[in-house]
Image (cartoon, rainbow, N blue to C red; front, side, top):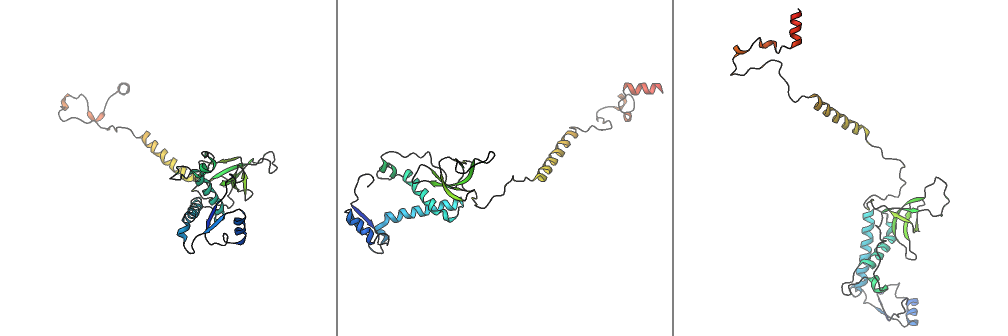
Length: 252
């Protein structure tokens, strides 16, 4: 109807949301033929069943991978449907559903990782002081269906909101724990004792290298087997005589 085309036939199963008086009156007024599948035969409605299964399994996968609570299931399903309409290619037509409906390729440069950490700009929603933070930490939940904005869960206000100015942390993995409990403020304490112990061991090893000589010279002279002791002048046990030692002997 939005494209100016009329719906000729509508096919559904015998569910209460489809088989009721209000929907039947709407179909009669607009000339729509409402066709039903056979009772207890989901094979005749296989396209819808498979599509619903894909959306359900995709949403459960997103929640399990990002470790988000189950009450974000609706946001996960909306994100899966939004993404599949823009990236899933129909084999026969070789086009995406978005391209078939809009007549042009979809721009996917704005897609982000579901459940990743992001920061939203407080653009005048709350009055800020001079030294107050201008951004709030949030969790990315998807895309708005009514405006060009992102849907996030604001950790400060604990509410789901729509923002345009959103910066996602690309270095943050979606597999990290997204616990909604209040995080403790402060830096993580390092194990300085372990670092000091490692540094002390490295210092001891370097001192051993500096104090150890490459060769330990013997205190006594060693003679070769083929050397005659008769050719040696003086006593071997006294060692080498220097000029200072000779001067000291002469003075005595």
